[in-house]
Amino acid sequence: MKPSYMLVIATCALGACKNHEDAPAAVARGSAATSDAGMTDAQKVAKGMADAEADAAKEAQRWTPELTAAVIAVRDQTAKDTPSALAAILASPHRVPGNRDRDGARHPVETLTFFGLQPTQTVVEIGPGTGWYTELLAPFLANHGKLIVAGPDAAAPAGKMSTVAGRRLDLMLAKSPELFGKVERIGIATADTLVLGPEGSVDLVLAIRLMHDWQRDGELDKYLAAIHTVLKPGGTLGVVAHRAAPGSKGEDTAKSGYLAEQWVIDRVTAAGFALAGRSEINANPKDTKDYPQGVWALPPTYREGEKDKAKYAAIGESDRMTLKFTKK
Image (cartoon, rainbow, N blue to C red; front, side, top):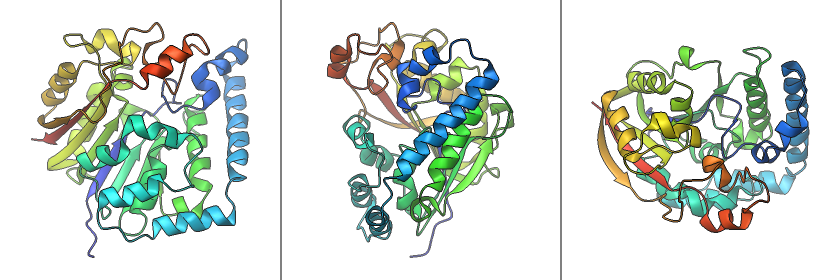
């Protein structure tokens, strides 16, 4: 099969996963913040780097010859279509323990298929957090496409917690040459210097559960501009975002992790895109969106710890919009 040299971008946070649902468990629960009380920024970074190394060493113990063989098998599989290939990858034992628990809420096969993922594409995933999607995309694209991971730089800006996220990303990609050996790594320092590739070279951009971060940090317009620049005419932007109550404004709700669907549509279309479709793949009507700790009260973060955990577990992950835009 002749490879297609299309470029796909999956966008995630560029920071240190400070509010990302897939942050390391201790950070997500808030225990890290408690144990870091009174520490200088330099000490916090040093501790974060040490924790990252310890977590990577623990994960490395899983990688037996049998697990490596399983990775090779799923990487080299012959599948009839994208959903079949992704389904096999989801069932593979290479996935980090606990990640499979999120499949029922995140619907990765349906979501990636809705956005048009193909095995011959070049995919750029920005700020992948702990790699929930990376461990699916890497084997899917290894033989006929390309995965480029762009995330926080592990060295710059020096002394910032974002470098800890960069180091975690580097360690994740280094753990298995069979799985991640063909992945290209791009370090990004700030949204101001964000360059996603040559102008007009990209077919698909995926922005998954992160648009609230961009809005909260005052960087939404910068991200949308960079995405618009790199997309070819007619290229696709896929968005998954925590959905706020209708009529609310992102300026008011982003701090809680939620954005109103129409507000998102208005902001994205104002940046030069047309709404091409929407799906309820990731909807959750149980989500009341009114928690003191915002969306991070819900699983898998459980920011309130054991308080009301059973209630939040019964609700499940957030109600999410799934939107497809095309570049005008």
